[in-house]
Image (cartoon, rainbow, N blue to C red; front, side, top):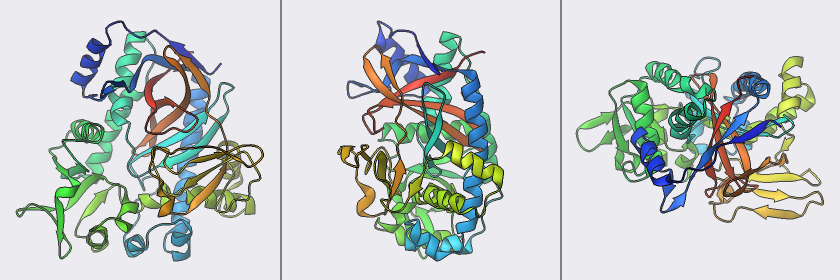
Length: 397
């Protein structure tokens, strides 16, 4: 068994939640609902080490594919990247190899037999940082279980030293607990003197991004999905500011290429055709990625989801006969704006927690180009807004 559950929920949950809040994890309970599961998942070390090796190689495979896409507008359209971003993608230089994004997270299905399959990559605006970097080491220490997550803050420090943002922002900063807490933790771990802002308080004047009348924003970390510049009011003005170099965003604009699930379909297609990738890379793609296509060519046992979407929105599960088995009706269906991909299913393992069963999604952060932090989410067969956080540690042997 790859995963073992450790511990039982404490009798005094409120005290535990209070302690986590003091650390910066203020949404362990949300409106009387328990978001944090007061138990720990322990992963076998050999499977964890294989997961790290797979992530290191897949990260460079995605990097190579993104560079293959850059400058080709047919690919941009194929990946459903909004046209308003195309000029910037063409004109701006890409970061060096392995650093197109310095703040990303892979999401894997890792089953109880040790089979590892990549579901998707969030290379632009991953959340869960506080849960992984702060809460998980705290929980692992209590159970005397190793946590590789202790190094996450050091990689953030290095990443932000390189990108050097002066501002950090999210939508509803100060009001939205999770996004605001994520921004605050990242700023703290960066060690930099950074001003935090609400994205909706920014405005663009002839390419200049401003906060109020006096503050000009030149370099900013933003928990704002770049694809929404093709949808939101003001998105075109912000994209113009980026492409003209009036503002540098972190993650950089090219992270949107990695973010598109269409890139996974392109990688799979190129692997099938024997193009672009080395023999070793092709082996890693076949071993750890799932057949993914931009057309519904799979007869059954597949997932359909929008190329850009978060928290389970737009996800549909189809059974062996090709019939719709389950869909996420709670999340926002972004397929009204973006094309879909069709991916072979790799169901999440089901664990029996104290409060009931849950399907475990294994997240792995990629910070400054390095795999370094596990994030557990437990919920339904589709990991959506109702899923819960559970810490993941690693066995000592």
